Amino acid sequence: MSLIKTSARIFQPPRSAMQSGRANTHEWVLLFTPPVRPRLDPLTGWIGSADTTKQLRLTFPTREAAVAYAQGQGITYELEEPARARAIKPKVYADNFRTNRPDNWTH
Image: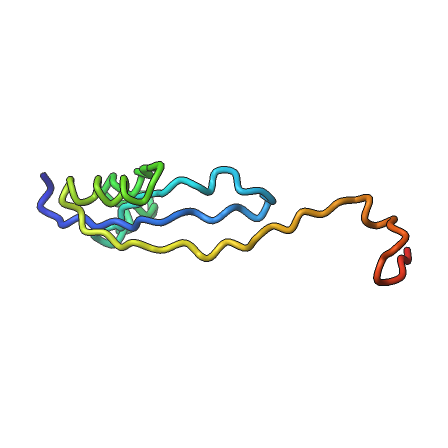
């Protein structure tokens, strides 16, 4: 076990801007927060750290599974509730050409 106290963030990722549906948004993700600041390597000038937990991205099917994993491993966690999902109103292309439309159809 490491001497540094590990902490994590549990959240449900939002959909990407290129996505219109709800695919890949039902899983829960556990990301470790870095315990120390990254440092500048004096030889190469690159920013780095000896902490490898920032490379981990654990996914779980439910929130309860992610919380149970964090509690079982002794990881302190911060749970972020997802934003409320908007209801998607289905649209039908044929409604553009209905004869009883409430407003006029223009180009």
